[in-house]
Length: 209
Length: 199
Image (cartoon, rainbow over all chains, first blue to last red; front, side):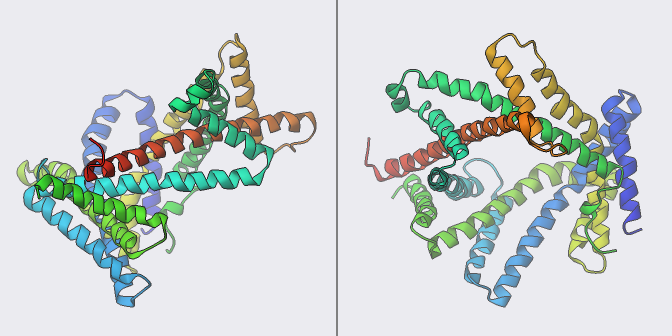
């Protein structure tokens, strides 16, 4: 009841899904996929969002209760969540409303800035790679520098061949390495899916009884 | 002060709060970080309610009386038992329901991840570049094959795969840096525009 039935659901349902990928039959494509699985998965999915919200709420509440390091900032999490939710539920999601104002003037600039910060950390990572002085690190850095310079006007001014070299790097060695990795990932993904389908891999069920 | 200017100043304030991390970790950054998580979560909740809960749960059950959908709604609620010590096993049911789709992953994974890649790799080797791509793909694949020792001529060939990967990682690194730089330019341009330094 606690582990066997969920396991059976995955195995039996999984094989129906395998059938779905091969068979164009009405029972599989229409009755199983369109009438059963899609509406059922849509109807159960909003509660997964609720699970995430509850998890974050519990984490921040525990942080405040225990007065863990930097606990005061957890109040900002609650403030952001409550204000945004009230704005969305109270005034709707249309453009020009409070929710979109919050999105455009706080969420969007903050997340864009957060990602732009990575430019500095990647530059420092490149510096560390250069200091490693191994032939592999040098090749990596040379390829990176060529690709970067080819995208800015100064690179083209330095050498008119740079865009062509960059394109060759992207089209030939880069493609070969990405294809080799993609094949490995594909084989690994299929092997893992098969392990789950046959009930060998059960870690998704969690620990306990 | 116009509403637009006030809105921009709010965006400037939060942008500066995040940028302040470049100096060191500080209360302004901490505040902005937590606020970002809270706002993103609130935004996600509102849109999940409006775009998923209302059209796929509330309307079919309450307005169209499609009572069968009460079962998946209850199934979804079982997720919340994850927090109960005694009844956490109930949350395995919705997880198992969503894991069913892994069955489709086997044939579709073979198609998209393996067959399509192999088809693209097995073309007539008419040009030098095609030969280089073919050899590189084989060398990269063999680099991850650990059942045979990487020694001798085989080891030297396999090592070529490592060099291919280093060039590939370098290219990916360069492209990612440029994407981040363009974001950074966008943020700085925004700050410059708001403060009216140019125009």
